Image (cartoon, rainbow, N blue to C red; front, side):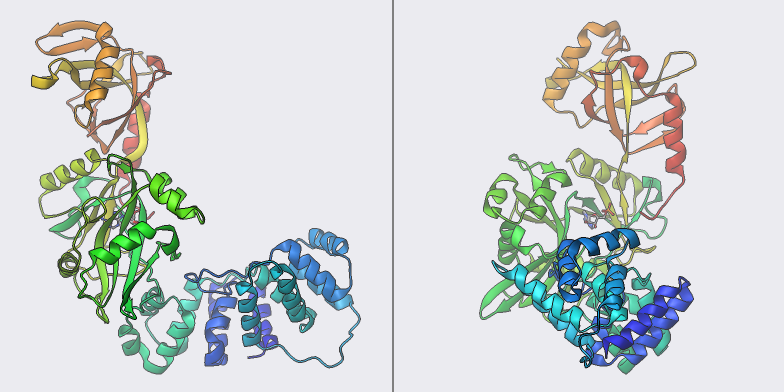
Length: 566
Ligand code: AMP
């Protein structure tokens, strides 16, 4: 396809913002483009040169582009820069100077789409000392093959500033319309292949049946299945019962592609956003090589990688993210921030897709083919239950162990790539809004803990009366050291004691996390915190700065709104 013809479509797309019209123009384009060009054209129209899972980047920034336009037109970089500032768009500025420039070449070979792609691919592959100069040379050559109309879009494409309003949803609908196939199926297959060009060919040649038969490709990441949020443990069996409940680990979604090559096991690791992070995690990659049964010739498995401290306790995602970003001194990072993998799914095994298999069977298979390496590669903790109390106990256990919450999965459901839909997978984590509360009472412990205060009675502030109204009891998840510290801090505040129970002067403010807030007659505020846990002592706060009853009520109202898509 000639670039000139593609530019006709770009111009038409740019003129409209109507979704229907955009879809119908893209549909025409799909029908017009030849097989060789399809993938590129469908990426270009969305403003991309490479697919999302491809690490390559064209790597030509604004400044270099100004230089290229200057070389191609003979106008100075300063003049061009001024025009860009005036028009607010480098593409338009390039068009302006191309219109002005004397047409030197009377005969010009018309640019082909594939030629543009191949040159951009070459540019992306340039490395080393003289790569800047060579990049410039290639870009100038491309620009010189354009007329003013074409150059505007070429410049925008190279700079990643296409903005035609065409997203994945529009391309999906255009394909569905063009070949009369199911648009949800198109979406699913795109989530597996991540290449609309290939999806078009299957839709056109084999229709819905062909699309249904698509299986994952080793080495190419699949979009992971996503979760809907629940707001209360009471919702967990709304859509299916029993459920497979798993710990929710706070780390990096990790998709492993494992296969044999020349007698050697190869592993690639992709993130939720399909980035290839194999190089950043040599420790985890090595562990996966060892943990997957040697009898398995290839597979795609999934889990969550977390950072751990030197005692093996989980650390928050922010810590791990330093490893994801780091591109050098990787071995040093491996030592500094040890990682741990928790596997929970399998999507492909020995040449066959496992996407359509139920979760309970997938999990069984995963357990068969993975031999955990304790502390290094483990299987996600799971519980299959239909009992709310058991589920709640498991949830609490996950939080007490320092994890983020739980995932609730339908044991009968297949793997739904890229989708966040009802009936498959949910997540439940404590409300992230913490409360600053005053400790107004406590209880002496028993046995080993007799010397410490425990079971702390928490209260919020009534702004009208200045009184403190109880809202819950914080009893579990405290370390010995925390108990000791709190006891030391509170001892002098004891006002009265009755048996083991003590009444405390409302003085010490603590920041508290919890699972949810419920209405309850048990406490003076009329609310009860479910599973409150200590985040930290707020020595910097006075009791009259503690959170008010209003705030507790507001959070209660907002959490009641129920299930939301996040
Ligand atoms: P969120 O990022 O809050 O939407 O929660 C979903 C994410 O939780 C997934 O993308 C995973 O990265 C992560 N996760 C942690 N543990 C699990 C698990 N056992 N099963 C599925 N996802 C998990």
